[in-house]
Image 1 (cartoon, rainbow, N blue to C red):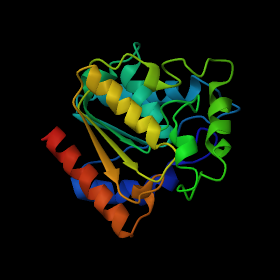
Image 2: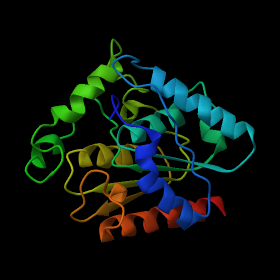
Image 3: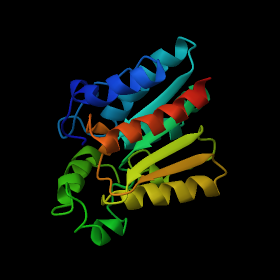
Image 4: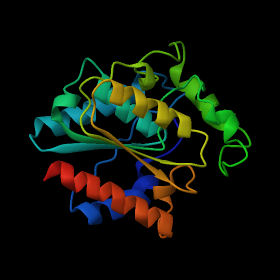
Amino acid sequence: MYCLGTPEIDRVFNAPLSRATGLDVVSVDYRLAPEHPFPAALDDTLAVWATLANAGRRLVVVGESAGGGLAAAAMVSPSSRARSAAAALVLISPMLDLTGASDTYATLTAADPDYGTDPEILLGPARAYAGDTSLEHPLVSPLFADLVGLPPTLVHVGNREVLFGDSARFVQRARAAGCDVDMHVLDGGWHNSPMWFGIPEADRAINDIASFINKAVR
């Protein structure tokens, strides 16, 4: 979410991903809403990305949930070198349309074990992050951005989560823009399934993501 979380929380995903790829994983400790609305978190993300890109290494940007939205926004930001420096982009259960327009907010309400009972758990923090900026701003909701030129992209999402529609719509638009995009749908998966370290679904997801990354950087 845009209002809570720390890099330490992501160790349950970052550690096994690092082992599976043999690569270093860097987490962005970005400023949180509502105290720091858009573009604070994106600015922090771009600052870290610029530092890494200037080191001349092949890089993959990975983001989950709100971080998936930030990762996508970094790739479409006209003020960054992110696209040219990125070997690949991985989005996990990303929040890409902060307007909440995806129909799966309604159709998957009963199926989503995390947010189906109250999508406002997602949409409220999203509005706090946007602040006075339109929810349709392309760097707030990357679904509305010009997606031409994205690096090879993997979108990983569960078919039980209300955010499924964001992923499906993004993939459709990215492919229409000529981008190389894979979409892996975890059958029975929920929001951020790869983060549930130690369960078979998470292990399969991490292996899928690692295979994609290894192919992109080698």
